[in-house]
Image (cartoon, rainbow, N blue to C red):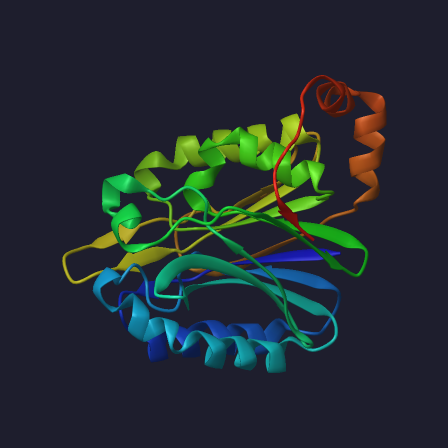
Length: 263
């Protein structure tokens, strides 16, 4: 199985420009071989808080377009605003040619940028099955919460996909924490960052999309700038490492896992 991370620029509020950029790239690569394709967090509109409900009206449209492009061999992990009963969620969707096969609403919102004032909080864990690979969905800031990763692992994940907008100045946190989440849960972790977030006030450099295997080995180590980065994963490594070092099994025997889980 291949993993592609789409480290591309995101322009605040410019949905049509962002959509063309990402979906053109996806169309060039989709359906060539079994692939998990991961886009950055909120890539369609950025964090345009005042217009989230407007952009949420476009979410179904873009999910349908992604589904049409995906073909039989591609799973796309993509993040968009979602409205439900007068609430707005930061939601990551898992999309194939059959449509949306799972979604996850962000549990932990990043208060320093006001995310908690404009989004409502999710409460569930999501793991989807793509051609026998169990893919867990989490978002950006949530790499700072190992409990979420343990819950997602307990739901059966072989790999956890993390769309993100993570500033370059905090890249050491991004790299260290994603690697730790892979090692402690003995699974693959792939984090997709945008290359830059363009806003009306400034351009925020991001980059450094990454992927780690269950041993903590680096599979993707991107630099700043635009690109689609790829790696191969073999989920048999998950079983082999968990048998070699039974720390995950020991933890599951010692701590109670009690949370609503979507699979």
